[in-house]
Image (cartoon, rainbow, N blue to C red; front, side, top):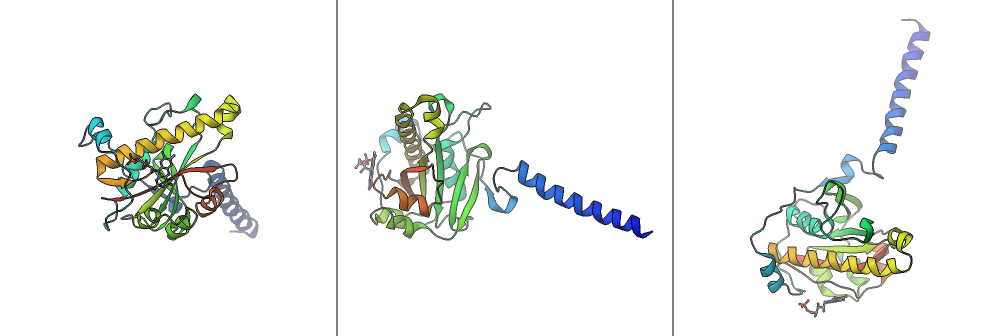
Amino acid sequence: MNTALIVLLAATVVLVGLAAVFLGQETGVAGESENETVKLPQPQTAGSISVEEALAGRRSVRDYGAAPITLADLGQLLWAAQGVTDVRGYRTAPSAGALYPLEVTVAAGDVADLPAGVYRYVPSGHLLYRLADGDARSALAGAALDQSAIEEATAVIAISGVYGRTTGKYGERGIRYVHMEAGHASQNIYLQAVSLGIGTVSIGAFDDEGVGKVLMMEEDERPLYLMPVGKM
Ligand SMILES: Cc1cc2nc3c(=O)[nH]c(=O)nc-3n(C[C@H](O)[C@H](O)[C@H](O)COP(=O)(O)O)c2cc1C
């Protein structure tokens, strides 16, 4: 093989490698590489109790058992909050104009088969995208008047809103729509939790900036609810 051919082959290998890296960045959802995501178990669409029983049994629970919740349980709660239930992208909770301004983030501390960390729920793929390693529960409690439920929970689910997605179409009125939608998502989590034997409480008393920082929220994203979850 002559020198020119070797140089040409080497250049081709380098170019193909660069193209793979470039295309990988372009086609993936921001940073969603294999090792940064956790695929959640398929959500169940049949349960052991009726909607009426879940409604009658729903209570805010602030003390939890020591047992971790499973990854399937966590996935089911996230699916209840914002899971996709229709090929057109519609979700478990209604959304004004189907604009979906809510984001769901998890501070996982003691979830079976899930390393402690901060994760963002990605409804389209029913998966978690890892934002940070480590147990954020006590920092989160610190940003929420040291409410013990947050520190004692096995995980904390945060519902946040990106107002611009809705106000872009509905103006100021969109702000109220985003708050309404957080209520829908929160209630879905409550009812799903009853069905799974999991306790939760919707928490609104916290410092927005502190919670946003701990959960690595974006500039235009506002935390609306914290929902600690744990086995009853
Ligand atoms: C908007 C909102 C904010 C709340 N914030 C908190 C909170 O910061 N801490 C807390 O322990 N409970 C909080 N709760 C839960 C209420 O205290 C609870 O829903 C109420 O006591 C009624 O009890 P129940 O949910 O068991 O019916 C909040 C509820 C709502 C709807």
